[in-house]
Image (tube, rainbow, N blue to C red):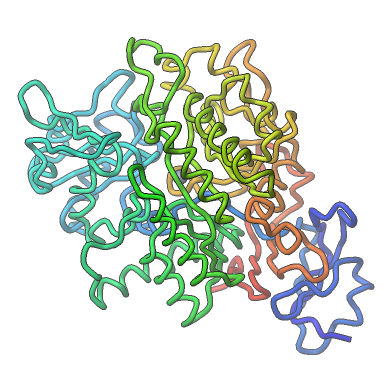
Length: 556
Ligand SMILES: [Zn+2]
């Protein structure tokens, strides 16, 4: 009989395996699961060398799969000033100035997690406002969603964009009547001149734009970048994450991950996409095929294509069928025309590449579904599992198309206003009628579609337990707003087996059964007996990925 490296016992195991949903012990050997059952069942696998973990009745689950994160940017942000939850001029100024005196942000002080309304409802963030906080050093506030940045005059000057600059469609350096930049920078290409000023030269953001570093980083820069990525991975492991789907990608990031894997083994399994951009020739997809050929191990794969169809509601860049409330004539925009997207969709599908498209506005979701439908018409039905990321607004007539086309709804519980975020400004911008079809987790699930849950870290906090809590307790935003809460088992599935399904791995991960990957998370308590609102107070006691303990609470 095989010998277990690790046996976890005295556990309340939720396996996500319908054939054997519950167990109280599990044995692991090498990178796979040997047995799942009762404590007695494990006796034959134990040896003196076996590490035995007493879960003390706590929940044990398949390791969390976060189906949408930005690892490199997240790792970099762990080192930055965070303004999460900080509002009002005085509090913001205090936080920024306390950081500035430490002089640990060479080039530019970038503060993360800035809220669009952080200076007060309707208060526009301008360079002059930021100059009052920090007049003589470059300062930039980065919106939590990573779609808008606000810079002071010194930063705009340092970035060479005080007088504006033409940027690709969809992005904008906003210029005022005086011909000077107002400080508001919309979308990646507009704020790249500012992120270029940071110690990383903005390399953590390049994957979002689908770019490679302009010149190859030198050894010191590369080592620093690897340090950032490793910090991000360790943070994932500390929160029970054993697999992530990155939603930005380039060869550089893949090479960094490969280098880490070679030298010490990745402690979290990663999946990285090829970024397809508007205007690219279809032949660029050769690079996606090349990525898939080069990275196809269980720890690092590059087997899908990521695109952005639109922006975000807060900056009115999400593409809507109707105008935003209060801004007549403004309904957002799409990065791709329908025929252009259809052609890409058909070609990706033909090449067997899964597609994941960021689509937030109802018109963007519609256009994406149309493209997936076109690929099915052209190539015939197949198990493509194309995905739509976010789906914040949804036209009711598009609801049945997810199940019909086998499209995965990849959603982030913490993004829903009234969940982990305030309801404004979203509610005012879209109005109650549209809001009723927004962030429609339960409605979409009941339509027969598959959901996968994620954080979109660092846009929102990474902790899957916070995502699960939000899925459990979100309240309707107003009288008549549907109840979109999720059951505990559906919430857990969203962060485990459904994430595995969305990467074609549901028989091998996101599930605890013999032969599956030894990816396991041990919680600090029993999640089923924890009040839903307190689920995020549970901690991760241990994380195991590929049979290796990648995090242990209290261990140094
Ligand atoms: Zn994202």
